[in-house]
Image (cartoon, rainbow, N blue to C red):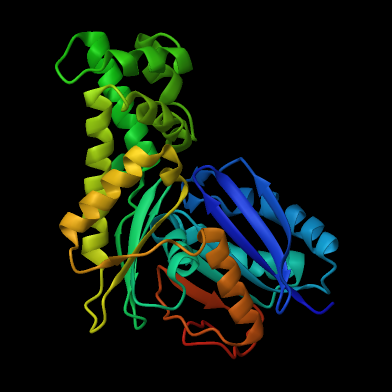
Length: 334
């Protein structure tokens, strides 16, 4: 079999990888449940490589490809915390795996490509974090994706944090509290008074917060406070989509992708209703695939020389560590 590609999706709950080949599609898959750490320079390139390099070698052997010529890394936080990844990954992947071109993409871009492919519109990528991205195929626009401390409004971490806040309000006897959420919080994390000490020191706070989101969804069936949290999350999602939806002559498309939709019909219905209110002229379509599918699409196009997506310094860059000329689209740093 000929040369292959590596496609990676790295997020707040871990990372997934695929090795495939043009004309054959994905051939081998791997995953790690350990999120890439964030250090003083942003996303930790060393920690990323510790996980991905051995996984890629194993997957390439399993797939039977004759080397990996292309790597696509879709990463949550790349646009704001990706300086170290951008500086170190292309060279390291070339040395360790023989990769000749590396695409670094914000997870919103891979979510977009996975959901809509090369069509204009807007995509909300909702998981542990949340970001919306839109394109008219000449450039990219983004909204939110600012992390669990400053944004990611409506995300799993946001819902979980709001649920824990309501639990602590109930613990204190303040208005806006939820006794059912307090019960759930203490079942998961122990006595409420000790929650800050157990949560604040952790480096994986977004994933821990998001782990409480399913309990919020469960309580929403009978608890108006939890129901209000889900409705507020849906409004945040619709606001982000409205901020990035391009003005085109055709009917714009909107899709929602990501693990957050697994919280159930109550959230999905709320999102549909809020999108209809906020974007009455847009057409909601189901996502064709997830962010990993988007990474695979980009990797296959780059390997085949048919890459045409617009470049963006923060959102999508294609780098050739060896200085090779690229035959794909306009997104190339050589």
